[in-house]
Length: 423
Image 1 (tube, one colour):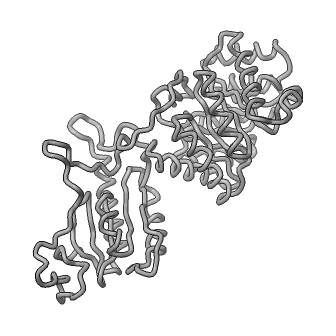
Image 2 (cartoon, rainbow, N blue to C red):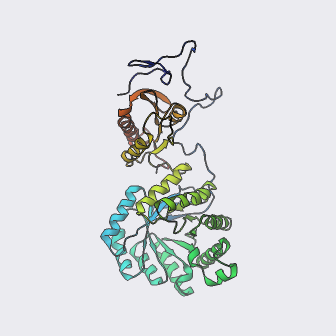
């Protein structure tokens, strides 16, 4: 239960059963919620507002991957790739369902052979999110994938051997109304470009991409997005910046072969964080040597940190120190685990002591700050009361569940409070 409290809760002498009394002569000891706005101004402090610190997005044309709009004013879409054998339909569909549950909006599967291509119609029939077929070398697999109903072909026009074959692939994409992703990797550049530029430089990567795009434009095909990936941050960032200045196609971001869950997440967050903060990027994949579901979680954390997407609970927590009054590490882990299923954009603050705790907690949708034997609960900047340490997690989870339920309630206009970008 949340208990009654006074504004003096963090002072030194406790009042049994109530809280703490003010020191003599201090007068009004109330704590400010936030600095008041100028007279006549807006004194609200939005907690989950992506417009609070808007980033200027790069202007580009918009294409579609299934029912997901890519580029233009559309939100940055989160993509992942299955690591199952595509011909194993049951395993592939099961993994795609897990990815969708985690928030994946576009999924890619490898199509290295006939068995994989023959599995595509059944996979497509059983999933709900758009499907991309990853094709290399054999243009006939791209034709089969298009006939199977995939929503996008990921190809490198330069490695399917011949202008006539490129023409066939483009004709199939146009006939089925699907888009093409031109994917360039530093590890597989054309030899003459490596010789010309002295290696897989950003300029060489971009030159390869431009040559492939030209092959599609020559056939009046423009439903295209581009990726330019290297395994290191610097080359990747420089390549994307250069390409962004040269074309108006949407860009798919990623650091290829970035590493395991920990190292790969950090490397990707740095590289993609730089680009996204500059407005560059329309879809993204966090390429990890890990469960693909992990890729989706990391992607949303990157987007949430820049306020580009607002899917799920955002837990703000202090790093812990010798002043903390509660076990912040344990509490944060438990709260994140118990609220992982919530999609609503809710910010939760878990703060350990009275130094920064109240201020940080006030700026969250719901927050807690450790105090003398009990913790102070805030909601939308308003102080709600005190809870015993043993009851903090229970109260936080219950209140977040209530807030999340409100996002599902229709408003008078017929939409939920979280509609708009939402995810």
